[in-house]
Image (cartoon, rainbow, N blue to C red; front, side, top):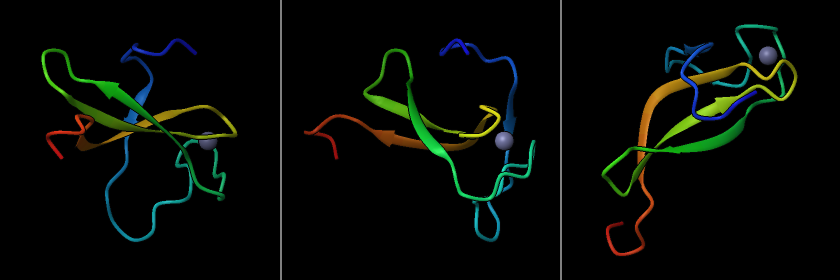
Length: 69
Ligand SMILES: [Zn+2]
């Protein structure tokens, strides 16, 4: 799976407890990756299913700058 590609990225509704992959039903939670937002010190958090490797975005953004926490 090529990082940085926007294809095959689904969204998950942020409700309840988020640990089940909607694509394959895997129930032990997700890996986390951060995709930098160009021109900023912020990144968007992506969730990656460890089982089927589907990627999901929830619109979560974090600052990765230690001086801009
Ligand atoms: Zn999955």
